[in-house]
Image (tube, helix red, strand yellow):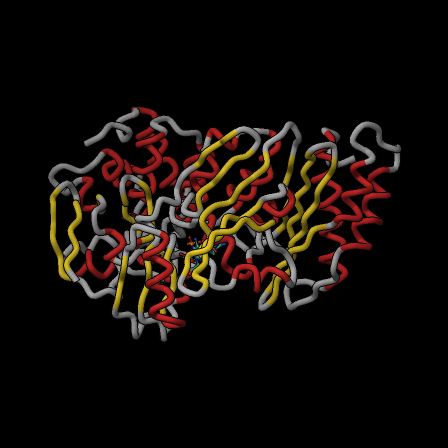
Length: 157
Length: 285
Ligand SMILES: Cc1cc2nc3c(=O)[nH]c(=O)nc-3n(C[C@H](O)[C@H](O)[C@H](O)COP(=O)(O)OP(=O)(O)OC[C@H]3O[C@@H](n4cnc5c(N)ncnc54)[C@H](O)[C@@H]3O)c2cc1C
Ligand code: FES
Ligand code: FES
């Protein structure tokens, strides 16, 4: 089936099988920043923004995303021009293997877009669905709070 | 993993939706947030019917009731201004206790009501709040709509079978409500949750126990009747009396997670706390 969506600000039209999940469709089209983890909604590694809200792309069929706007980690920034959150994660050494990081950054972006200066509690709640097996949580929380302090991550880019 | 899924539909009317469901029989399923359906990914499912284009996401207060469309997400329940009322606190608390943000953004009221015959925190709150369900079904080729009191216990499976949940309708008034729950960890399903609500001069209670393989949502009318008499004036030992009444009405539900006695006692404690919150009294003395 043919689906049309807005992906990282650009209109795309894809051929997808009805059973294909958004994680797979994204990765098949080269967007490998969205990770395939538990595939059951538990780990947050596959999080993307769907119409600005964080969702687990492993529990969204590609067909369900048709007509909607999807933002992946690649849509936030890249090596040459990282998003303030991406830069803050690097600056705070909030990354080791990096497998959980795209999901955490996406979750933080969704939070800061609606709440530019969240409390630490709100940051903890937003990262709660993102278990990390190597870095832990203190540094990611610090990274998000640092961006919140400058209020830079809350600005649309 | 879906092995047989070969068709995705996105109907825009209730009629079209129920016709599609009927035409495909047992191999088709309604799809709302997908947090349960996709996580289970039934291997035999051939067709999913996505509800996203149906006009089922409204939140509308009219006079003495509030209508919440079945596609309203749990995230929206948490932040919806129409729910910022003391009598609906139990529902906000239940939505806030659900899983994590990304899942709250997807999971919907309709899905929560249909899964496991509508047990868990949100249905516990709905049962105590006196919710009604607006349902649509296909009967003899016709689409029939009906309003049903929130179904609990044995009634639930039959009442919900084959139905499209269109909305939840909540009575509005001047009362208060509260939900108290306990799970072993922040991410586990609760071992028990109890909701209490005061409405039109009476107290209504619902309790839900849940564990692997079984669940039980029930209302507690005898304790409710007793507690209603305490709305204006309470005896000094009302907590002890309430506990005895609750223990008499709650099931001793046993499974590998907790013994029956433990769960029943836990539920009684949660019930007393929910009542204290409704009475405006300290929960722990
Ligand atoms: C990681 C994870 C954590 C979870 N944690 C919790 C938790 O903490 N608390 C909790 O309560 N649940 C939890 N769940 C279970 C699930 O998220 C909930 O049951 C959720 O509310 C389902 O809603 P949905 O909209 O996603 O339903 P869907 O998955 O879309 O549908 C579920 C079922 O309901 C039917 N259905 C959906 N909408 C309607 C309708 N309007 N009319 C008729 N039938 C309908 C579908 O056909 C399907 O059978 C969790 C699930 C996952 C994967
Ligand atoms: S892969 Fe989607 S939540 Fe784990
Ligand atoms: S950095 Fe390795 S899992 Fe988080």
